[in-house]
Structures are given as C-alpha cells and as structure tokens.
Length: 97
Image (tube, rainbow, N blue to C red; front, side, top):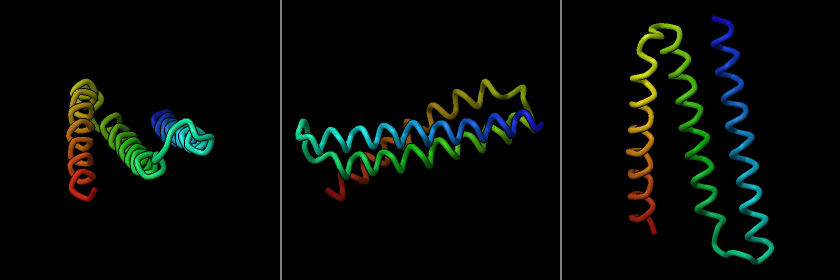
C-alpha cells in the first residue's frame, strides 16, 4: 500500500513539474516574439492539466488499492473522460471568447 501512495505522489509531482516547464517555455516563446497571444490559452491549459492529472492520480490510487483487477477499465475510462472534459473546456472557451 505504501508503494501505491509513493507512486501516486511521484506522478503528481512529475506531472506538475512537466506542466510548469512547458508553461514557462510557452511564455518564453511569447516574450521572444516568435508567437503572440499565448498567455491566456497556455494558462487555461496549464490549470486544466494540473487539475485533471492530480484527479487522475488520486482516483488511480483509490482503484489500485480497492480493486486492482479493474485498472485496465480505469485506464480506458480516464482516456474517454479526459476527451470529454477537453471538449467541455473548448466549448466554454468558445462561448467566453
């Protein structure tokens, strides 16, 4: 059980590090003038990614502890759920803009 908790914590930390590094890289690209108007889309995507990845990791930890036999179903469901959340986010952004 402690191994599952450790893996969950490492996944959350590394996903946050990767999102932050990619966000900083996008902001640097914008500041150098290679692209424009990246600040808001990148910020929305960064927040979305951090929230979704953290939620995925926490749900994975619960599923891995309670019923490890259903992890394959979990991976498939998470993939579909991410796509639906992304479509909802794009729809909300479309309405706001």
